[in-house]
Every structure is written in structure tokens, then in C-alpha cells.
Length: 248
Image (cartoon, rainbow, N blue to C red; front, side, top):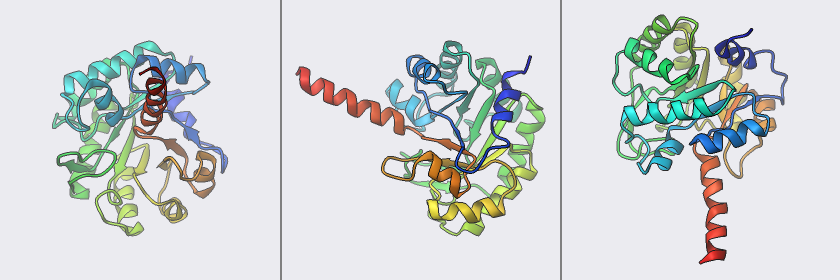
């Protein structure tokens, strides 16, 4: 029997152009079940979505509450779950890995900038970490996790106002060398994806946003994996507002 982490890892490889791995982002157990029932082979939680569902600003969820929320999502579905654990909450790599594995998640996002107020998926103030420092941390995570976690290394250059593709590629290469399974240059413009694809070895994560290219179009540009941040929750809230408006 294939383990969940092996299944998640396999889903990222041998993808045809235009057929990227699409990973919806559940924010609670109910949304996770909906995505699984629709046929999603795996899920990827968004920290911003979970924060909103718990009544926090993104980046302000206490680690214990975040891990508990991830555990509820994992427990509610049978498909592999990867979890956005922001920058690791300041935890040592070994403790971070063990606490994440206790939730049942088999993958994680780790970002390479330090957040300020409101510095989550959508922007806000934040400072990029030194790439060598982040690579060392990722190597520690890999050493602690072995093959038990699929590590998606977020590259925050575009998010933090550094638009040059070369800067993202430089960081991505360091992170892959440190043991990352996938890299995620968040908010990279679609037109940058071919150059990112050419410069980075291994799976490449892109974010799909409302009004932007479809997941399939992003795949044709070079993305291997598509995630949505808190976008699916915001779309759901928009539908809920419409329903509420009919009732009130």
C-alpha cells in the first residue's frame, strides 16, 4: 500500500503541460469533505483561510490552534493533506516536524519572509530572510522529517517587492538543494512562469486567483501545482453574503 506522503509526492511528477496538480485549500473539516467528494486527490490548507475561519488575522493564529485546525481537516478526509505552517512559528525544526506529523499532515508550506502586521498571503509588511539562512532551516526540516513530509518552499520575492525572476530562481535553487520537494514563488506574474520553469528544477507551485489565468493555463506556462491561498474561502463567503442578503 502506498503511504499518503508517497502518494502526494507522486502526484507532483510526470504532469503533462496543461494538466497541473490542482490542490484546493480547505479551511475547516466541512470544506475539506466537499473538496474530497468533488474528486480532489489531495488538499493544501491555507494559513490565511484557517485564520479567518478561527476569527484571527492571517499570521496571528497561535500555533496550537493552527495545528489543531489542521488535525481536524486531516481527520475528516482520506486524501493526503499538506499544511501551510507559515514560517514555522519560531519552533526548532525537529519540534516543528513532530508537531506537524502529529496532525496527520504529510506536507507543508514554509515561507521565507518574516511577517509584519497583515503580512500573509495578500501582502502587508514583511522582510525577506537571508536565502542561505532559510536554506539551512529547510535542510534541518528535511533532516528531521526524512521522507515523511513533502516540503513546499515558498519564495516571497514577488510578494515582498523584488520582481526580478533571477532573485526568485536563486532562492529556489538553494531551497531545492537543501531538500525542498517543490518551490512556490507566490504571486509570481503568469508571464514570469516560463522563465521560472526554465530556471528551477522540480515541481513549481503557482497560485490561481479570481480573474486570472485558469489552472490549466498556468500549467501550460510551466506550473506543476496550483493552489489558491484563501481565495476559495473568499468566494464561498461571497456566495454566503448573497444568501444572507436574501434572508435579511
